[in-house]
Length: 171
Image (cartoon, rainbow, N blue to C red):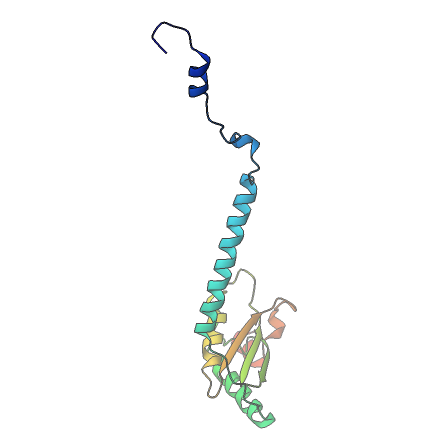
């Protein structure tokens, strides 16, 4: 084309645009919501996998050793003796005599599980007492695993204290 002259059909054929792909709006595309959900699911799965791997490293499989009735009674007695060294910070009575320990089970392993409560749901020692119970009961000779469950039924009342504790507190 010469400047100032109209385009010829040959010029138009040479300058015709090459076919382009359809605009992005015409192509199917996952929604932003689907992308976000997929990424969240992947992240959650990765976190679960990491936690499972960490748990396996932290607690290797335990070979459960059968516990005779005699050994179970000895371990339970030692756990009770140990729990009598733990005191509620607001009451000068140990947690066993206070009636906070509801049940102690010794099973194969030997494993110990303690069911306990607190004087109230707002107890200032709500985090420290169960952790101390787990640590000390788990340190009793021969125990390989210990768990502590906090229960709220039945609710603790002063009548659950032993006579010794009630005398100590002049009740």
